[in-house]
Structures are given as structure tokens and as C-alpha cells.
Image (cartoon, rainbow, N blue to C red; front, side):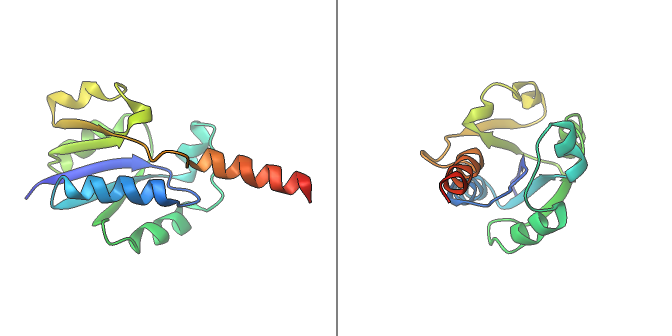
Length: 133
């Protein structure tokens, strides 16, 4: 069995998230998602619209996801790879090169982002629409 892991906030779920999860799952048999906790997002200076528990419930409904674990800090990735016997670590191409140091433990793959969509873009579009109203 081949185990794949990826990490993220997964707030305002969109087709780009689904594409990443689908492609990550195709690389193996079991997909683990490290979901950033609200506390970790605060450290990253990110504010999610949905709480950790709401984002977790949404991800649990996605057929590609087998297990969700809380992501509490940057350093835990190494520990998670060892603990869950991960074969492939996957992130979006916007993180290209940032996790190459994990390649001593498993294969590191950066998947291309879905063009034209991101949580940041959705938030900006919503702000612009709000300004018009």
C-alpha cells in the first residue's frame, strides 16, 4: 500500500482543492490530509472563514480523503511522514522547492495549481462584490 500526505487550510473549498486531492489520491492508495488548526493558522497570520472542525467535516465528505490529522506546526511534517509510513509528500506548485528537505524520507511531489482559482482570489472577489453593494 502506498501512502500519500498533503497539508493545507482548505478554507472556502473550491475546484482547485478538489483537483489537488484527486491527483494526490491517484499517486497512491491512502491519502492523509494534514489540516491546519485555527491556532496554527494564527501563527501563519491566516484567518480561515470556517473553523477547524467545520473544515474537517467538509474534508471528511470528500471521497479522495482517507484520514485527516491536525497540522499544529511547521516542524511536524517530518514526524508525520515517519509515524504514518508515508511514501509520497504532495503540495501545490506554489510551494515548489520549500519541502525538498523531506526527500530523504519520502518522494516529494509538487502538483500544478488549478488556473484561475484560489481562496485568496475568492476572498478578493467577495470583497469587491461587497464594495459594489
